[in-house]
Length: 297
Length: 229
Ligand SMILES: Nc1ncnc2c1ncn2[C@@H]1O[C@H](COP(=O)(O)OP(=O)(O)O)[C@@H](O)[C@H]1O
Ligand SMILES: [Mg+2]
Image (cartoon, rainbow over all chains, first blue to last red; front, side, top):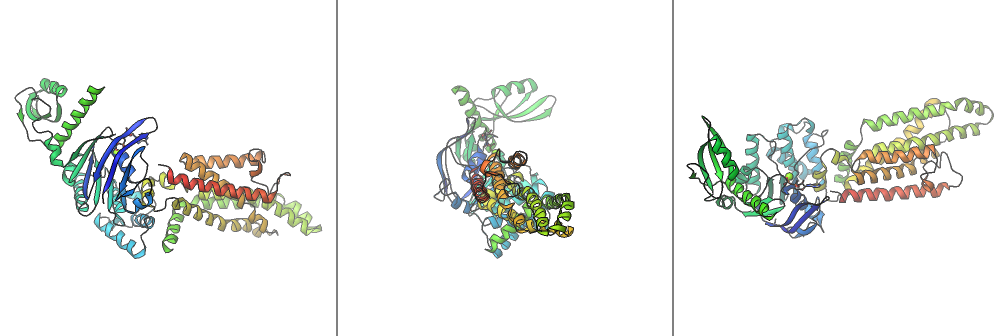
């Protein structure tokens, strides 16, 4: 299912420009929407999910216009919002049944789908428990189950791994990668590792603009020659923080730190080049972005 | 068809709770109190003119029913447009629903079905238990039009402002205003023309206006539910 986003801008009341001329074409596979908090990820996903309309530009899903034919787009769509909740007084099964009914699934198909989804997300044992008693992780899994009901060709999940423990997070990523085999999955996150493991392609969003679009390895490659490792004392660490983007700092005892930094020139000290990771690439692009913004105004 | 019925059932479970039942019990009691306040007079009358006695009790019944039962409709239906949002389920419901206005529409239908079923029970049981003889027809009809108007008003305001409390408050204000200063705020949309008529108002026209305005307001609320982010 192809999603085409053309020159989309979104202004919220109070002149907040949440999206600024975003153009993206997304095809089958798991697509990562990466960016810091406030970058506009949720805004963009809500527009595709027909929950809101763009101020400018247009969005089509499988060639269907989101603004003019939203009901038809919703037929193709499964959506997991950033803060998912279920009716507390309904059980997991009852809630899925309600959503299935809304999606227009008829009797036997609905029952089969619900049972399959409960199985897929590992909630079969909790099907008769009320959603009000669920832990964060269980609720999130119920959320993905409701989104998947009816086997949508387009699945949109907004920061689905937030609030999950490491084990659940890994399970979830694998599930999303798996789901992307035969459908379009758009996954937003501010956690680089989510994209690294689950996504074939990604876009990096910053302040409402697409600042990178490509494969994870390409984003990592953007930091080639700009990643360094160095061991320094505390004073040098402080100075390095001002001149470079410190990706990680590990205390090695005796007031010394082992740093991994991103910057245009080697940091002070006996620095050696390091192989860039996706996270380094993310940092490098964000750093360039910030510099450009500072230079502009 | 079966799917629609199943959906109505689910909505009924989400919409109707103890609050509605409690309100019906209270309304029944209030009606009993109202009837007993004229019981002495009615008994005296009954000895000389049974028709007049019956008319007296009926007048009290119509007045009480028209006052109380529209509030029951409000209690049953005010959450219709904000239920999912209040539960944090708004975005899920709004993306799952094929025809969005259908969601609050089904909720209004369920609430009104419960309300319509409750009217004869609440209004018939107290006089029956008290051994008071009165005609039920006008009593049952009287609350319908004001209930339709107040429901529409509450829903439109809640859909506009995004919380059921504001809708309840708006409808409650109109109700209190018409109780204290009949027709001053509402004019031709005066709520209590059946139980406490104003001289310059035609009952039939007033009822039609109330129902029409209620229907328009409900349609407006459904439209707002569809549009609002
Ligand atoms: N309903 C809203 N009204 C006003 N501003 C909003 C609204 N929703 C989001 N914003 C603003 O739009 C920007 C993008 O937000 P959002 O899309 O939630 O980003 P992200 O999901 O990437 O964290 C932020 O500056 C946020 O404060
Ligand atoms: Mg977000």
